[in-house]
Each structure stands twice: as structure tokens, then as C-alpha cells.
Image (cartoon, rainbow over all chains, first blue to last red; front, side):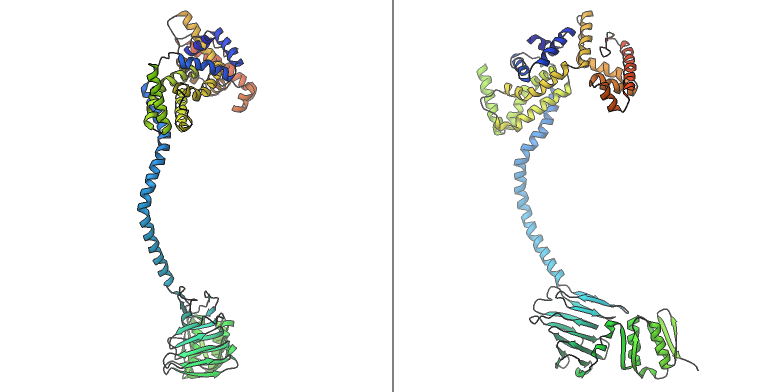
Amino acid sequence: MNSLQQKYRNDELTAKELQKLRVKVNSMSNDEIAKEMFESWMNEDLDVSKVSQEQMCRVKERIDSVVATKHFSYTLLYKIAKIAAAVLLPVFIISTFYLYKENNELVSEEMVVSTGKGERASITLPDGTKVMLNSESRLGYTPKVYNKEKREINFDGEGYFQVSKDKKCPFLIDAVGLQVKVLGTTFNLSVCKHDSTAELDLEEGSVLFTSLRTGANVVLKPNQRAVLNQSTGKISLVTDKDIQNISAWVRGDLIFHNTELVNVIHTIENNYGVHIKVKCNNCLSDLFTGTLSNTDLNQVLEVLEKSYHLKARKNGNNIILELKIN
Amino acid sequence: MNDTLNSLEQELIRGLKKGDLKAFDRIYKMYSSRLYAYSVQFTKSPEDSEEIVQDVFVRLWTNRENIRQEETLRSLLFIMAKHYLINAYRKKVNSLVFEEYVNCQEAISEDNGNQHLEYEEFILLLQRAMNKLPSTQQKVIELSKIKQLSNKEVAEELFLSEQTVKNQLSLGLKALMKELNRLPISLWMLFFIN
């Protein structure tokens, strides 16, 4: 029966023999077939002369690509890892140091919120303090140091402050000519580089107001106003029952009480982002008392027209108020 | 002689177990040709045999640690190859194409005792003749006679109706017969056609 398999292997079968072989193989189990095969494999003289060495080499290459890489990779990988560690470790240390420095620097930078003409802004500081900025105002602070031992900001313009209570960490505002120290309170601060005075109106809580020029300190109680004369550095305290008015700009109204027209015009310009030229005889020093809208420019101009016999001419953002003839 | 062979093999096995690539290379040189030649005898296919050699040696390497020192390489290689060989053997023995080959081969050796048709040659001629057929007939013959699928299965595979399959098959085989009869080996009996 061996010979059938042998004939099969050597392509010497006849058609009939193939049929016989078929029947036989289909009835045998794998183990039985294996036994037969094993016998011939182990003991038979196989003719290998026709096997191409080139072909065997190609196959070996394919084998090597699977085998050698696996084997290679463990020892090589280990070596590479060792070298990599030696090279990379100093790199890591240096870059960490560098990044740490950079990060620190970034954090040492100042955060600034500023508003342009006619703009308003709202800002919440890291400690929860809320500040509403009126137009042309600037608030700056350094995130890195803020809220550590003290909460310090520098400020120019007009802002409505609602400072979070923190007795251990005083809130400090640095501005031109003055410093305000707050513990937790609500107030309005108006201080402008170019203005002759600065004002702080306290609504709630208590603040320490310091004039940088004289060094004088004033502690304000609610409903008190401190007015700083920038040229003398002197502070005057005014008790104004209606301090709520001062923060009217937060609610949206422009309220004036015996304010020189020139300053009223200024305020209107700031609020609406327009430029107003007034042509009249001495009206600019007139004292104005009244409430103007901060959203309706036309209403404002109407009031001014009526109050001072003026006629308004608009040209984009430029407005001219001139004496009405007749 | 056997002793030296034995001790050489023992040394190689020891080296292999340790992961010595050089030992592995030597084992390959010793046995790859034999394994290849033996595989071809069963599979009748050079490609399949190359694959067997490749797989067996890769497995030999990856399982090197589990090899018992007392084994002989020869038997070891057989154990790893036998699964492939048995499968190929069963398949070929039952294949219609192989049967056709055997018929041709028998006819040829009867007529000219010297001439021996190699299986590979046979396949080549058959393939050439097949390629000349229109594509559907070709596909139908391939699935029906070579892969030995039923008419229903062929119909499903090619998205045709069973009747179409039958028609294409009959047309195709007739054309194939005609084509093969032109060739020098003109004794095709084409038992494809029942």
C-alpha cells in the first residue's frame, strides 16, 4: 500500500490507481496517514538535486525577517533603551527646567483688561472679585501673585468694584496718586490719568483710601465719598446720601449734579464713543444738573439742545453743537 | 557515521534551544531542501511548499525552548509539517483537476513511454487554454470544476441563475476542449465533462 502513496508522490499513478487511492485516503484517519508519511520521510532517499538553492535562499530571507527581528529586537531594543536613557535623561531634565522657567515667566506676566471709548467690560478676578469697567478704563494684575498674600491690581479709569471678602488678604488698588485698600466691599472708583480729581464712592463695607502724594489716609464708611485733588494730593470726605447715583452708569444712566458742562460733554463723549464740539459763549462752564441716557444719544443731544439753545449737527462720530440762531 | 550525525544534531539542538541563530541557519541548510522536495510531492505546488518550509522553520524557532534535547531534527520537522502535508494530500487526491492530470499523464505515457507530463506543465497548459475563454465561462469552469462547487453555489457566487451556470459551463467546456485539442498534447479527455 505504500507504493500507492509513492506512485502518487512520483506522479506515476494510473487513473484506476488514483481511484483506489482516493477511496483509501478518504477512509483513513489523520494519524494513520501520518504514520505512513513519517515512514517515507524518515527513511526514503529523496532526490533534492532539483531543488533550487536560490529558491531556498529566498525562503530563508523571509524566515529571517520574521525570526531575526524578533530575536534581534529584544537584545537590540535593550541596548537602544540603555543608550536612549543615557541621552534623553539630561535632555528631559533641561527641558523640564526650561519649561518650568517659561511657565513661571508667563505666569509672572500681567493680565490686562481694558476698554476703549464707548466700551464696557466685566471682569472676575481669581478670588471672585467682580469689576465692571466703564469706557476707557484699564485694570491690570499679575495672576501669579494675586490672591497669595495680597490682592493687588493697578487701575485707571472708572470701575465699579465688588470685592470678595477676605480678611487675611487685603485688596489693593494702585492708581495715579492714590491707593485703595479694601477688605470686602462694594464701591465705585473713578480715577483718570488726565483728570484733576479722583473719586471713590463707597456703597458697602469699608475702605482705606491713601493719597500717595501726601501719605494721608482716610477710612471711608458706607455712603461716603473721598475726593482726591491730584495736584495737591489732598483728600476731602463728602457724605453723600445718594451715592447710589454715582454707580448709575452701571445701571445705565448718566446723572449729573452741578457738573460743569465741559465735564458733562466729556462723559457723553466717553460713553458713546463720539467727539463733540460745542460752539457757544461761555456755556461750557455752566453747571448742569440732570439725568441723561447712556444708550440713547439722540435723547442726550435733545436735552442739551433745549437746555442751552443749541442745534446739533451729526457727521458720523463727530457732533457739533452750535448756538441756535433765533 | 550515525554517531557523528547524532552528536552534530545534538549540538545543533542545544544551540537552537539557547537561541543561537547560527545553529538555526545550519539546521535550515541541512533540511530545507528535503522538506521542500517532500512537500512538493504531496502538494504538487511550489508556492504552497515554500510556504510550508517557511512556516515550519519559523515555528521551529519560536518554539525552540520547548524542544526536547532527545529529539532528532528530522522527526521534529515532520511533526511540524505533517498537518499541512496531510491536508494538501487529501485535497489533491480528491481534486478533479488532479484526476484530469492523471488521465492525461496515463494517456501520454501509454503512447510515448518516455514522455512524462509534469503536473505543473499540465496546470500551465490548462490555464493558458482557460484564459482564452470569455470571462464568465472561465469563472464558471474555475468554480465548478477546479474549486468543485455545486451549480447552486456557483450561481450564488457569480450572481447568476442556475440555468445560466449550466449553459456557461457546457459552452465553456466545449470551447476548452477545442482549445486544448490544438495543443501538442492532444489527449485531453476532459473528465470535467461527465
